[in-house]
Image (cartoon, helix red, strand yellow):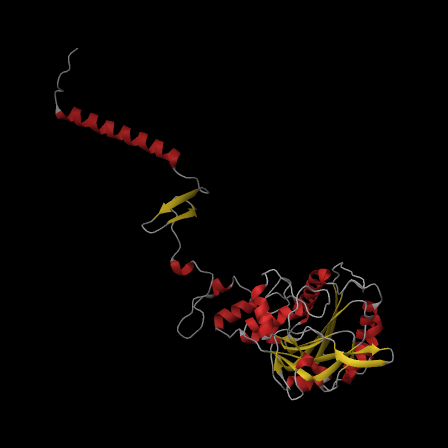
Length: 387
């Protein structure tokens, strides 16, 4: 049947409206399948960046910028502008600080002026402990300013038992005036042993010295609190002057060592004191030239006869009698006084090669690289036992 024009315009308008309504319903039905669910990630594109957010609902609105940070917003008088409801999210101490703008410094441990932390790593040292504590008792330094901390490692004798008994004697049984500020004992085994014959062979030195560095790092990071000075002392020293701590502190150096000697037999009936700690030294023009020629992975160590390197460094016994204090580039650990801020700044004992050195010599190199001064007293002598 041929198409004929409707008899009036009203019929046409009704048909058009119905057609539009039908098209709109079909479009909404299609869009409902493409909208994200509540937990679906959607991508929001801006003119400058693309961010991914988690949609919390179809009417999601980003929080204002001043509410996105977890830190308190300060007003002109330095106090927090957070209200009580917001502050309820924090602990009592945090609320006090955030609400009043109170300085954080009082919340930290104040430094104890002139306090001294003596650190001693021990291994099979039972036979030397009586001498060790006898020398400590003779120190002319306020006992209440001294803290002791020991790390006992890989010992097969009764070192640990004797140190624990010493702690009880000093801190519980002895008179109060002889008690130390703190007396700490730690144990950490590294499961590394060498015979006396093997301990100084060059081939074993890197492993041995890096293990010693690990022990020292373990000890100072565990024991150091608010002390102003740190003193590293060997567990087998024979003698040092009672006033040595005061004498060394008077120089006010970041790192300072005396000259450690040992009484060696040079003939059948003749003994003579000579240098013990070859780890305290000063670079020379010859040693600096040598450093330029060796490979980066070359490990240098002093005093071991089978070392392939001859460093030509200047040891403590090579300085003149008039040289009271001298700059050093390497130090040993027999008796080493350190300002505690050197350790707190992150300077420890390298367990990796730092300028060809590890452990105490690496510590000296690392301290100097961080701007600290390293010095020695070539004519101030202490004695190590002969072993």
